[in-house]
Figure 1: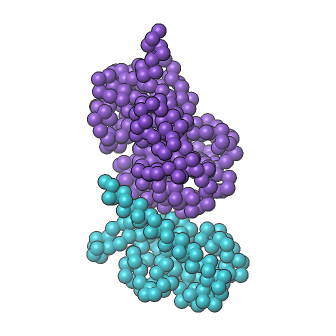
Figure 2: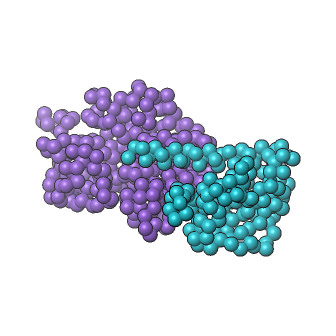
Figure 3: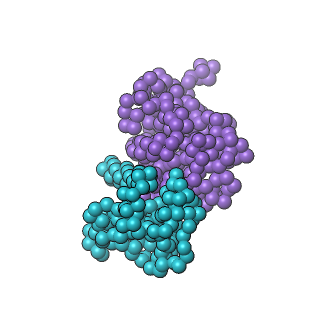
Amino acid sequence: MVNDKNIYKPLRAKLKDVIDESPLIKTLVLIPEKQFSFKTGQFIELSVDGIGEAPFTPSSSPLVTEKLEVTIMKTGYVTEYMHNLKPGVFMGIRGPYGRGYPVEKFFGKEVLILGGGCGLAPIRSLLYALEAIKDKLIKVILCYGSKTPTDCIYKPLFNRLNITEKFEAYRTVDKAEEGWDGSVGVVTTLLNKIKVDIKNSIAVVCGPPIMMKFGTIRLLEMGYQEDQIYLSMEKNMSCGLGKCGHCMMGEFFVCKDGPVFTYNELKNTPDIWK
Amino acid sequence: MKTEGKKLTSTDFKKIRFFDHYTDKQLDTIARMSSVKEFRVKEILFEQYDELSDVYVLLEGSLSLGISLAKEKRIHLGTIEEGQMFSWSAVFSPYISTAWVMATTPAKVISIDAKTLNKEIEKDCDFGFKTMSKIAQTISHRLSDTRFQLMNQLML
């Protein structure tokens, strides 16, 4: 009974599969012991007993409750440990936490998504959610940048989106490799080739801080209003409950008030892109 | 490189984002100083430090833009997308290109005679303001993208 009320007690989930996405990024496919629901953009705390836990936004469809996919970039001790896990082990899930994407506000609009690097993980979940409500949207445009073609994750996703009605997907790389004949340059260069009705559009930005900064500046230059731009601020989250204060950004707890914010909400926050 | 015989009209320019906000009369003026040129795969449109006489807008295909340490060592910085303007150095003294541009697919570009364009910029203030604003925006985006690239490299 005490355990049922323990907000820190994770739900057990069996690791079913580990998918290599790029040299530094893997997707863990988990089967929770109970059905697990989340809203796209919300995050979870994923743990390994005796090792630690870390926050991640699921990359799978929010419509699927019996399976959860989490895409993890190797950045430190815990994530490296998670990369080396083998199918069959149990992990812990806490959450879901925070405020996700308000997809109902996207109805009747064009959705422009700007993603970089591992930021495509939460975006993939959003794309699944948008695909399910595509009848209520005008169109969805994904612009994604990775360092090299090898670093691009979910490669089949781009082909699938480009044959899905109302969806367009574009990729660019900072540095080309042998055999790459697509765009080269930072992700903002892709904005030169898309056609979007800015007044009737919502923009979503998710990726490394530098990309989010330059992406947001370009969107503002294009004519987007501050409340038309949604940012996914996934950093420094620790407890997930608004208690530890690690994720404080100005007046906000990213874990509780976010991680999805409009630029209008955050524009006066110091060190927003830190 | 091949120059197409087809005469351009204002209608051809209306489809291109770079020419938004120009009046029909102004687009006719641009059309009169323009031609369409075609380039083969791997054909160099111009080299870094070449003297330039034309401003280009990419109509079809894909172009690569970069800088060189030596002729054999080309550094590819980015891709020029359809509808983008490039070769802006042709409008400003000393009219020397700051980068090379090469066709990565068969490419079709609008070539605008820079001397005639500059004369029109001096003659028609409204036309001049629009054109200079568009060119400044292009250069500003290029600069911003370069800073973005630089910060990416510095953070590695």
